[in-house]
Image 1 (cartoon, rainbow, N blue to C red):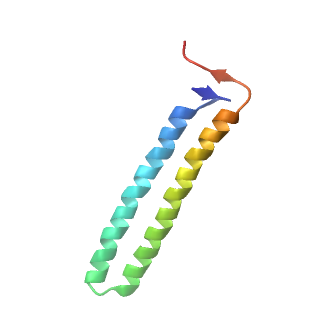
Image 2: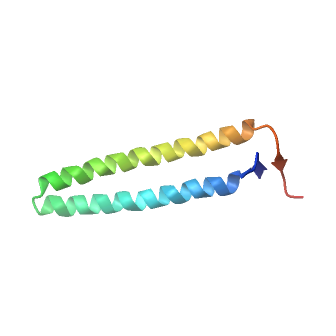
Image 3: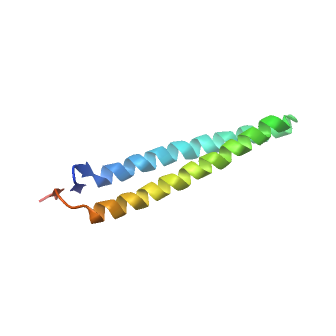
Length: 84
């Protein structure tokens, strides 16, 4: 459905696509963190752990964006296009 010129279904899918990408990057940071720890590189391990925490925050913000999109779309006034 389109509301005010935005296809909300596609918009939500794009947010989910970003989330999938961030999830993959978090997994890589996690794996590299373990490799660094195993090698005794504590500073590198800590930096990667910090990056993982930031990526978790990004994913939470993306969830907030999806919720906000639903709220904005339901409260939108103006043009609404539906398939007939």
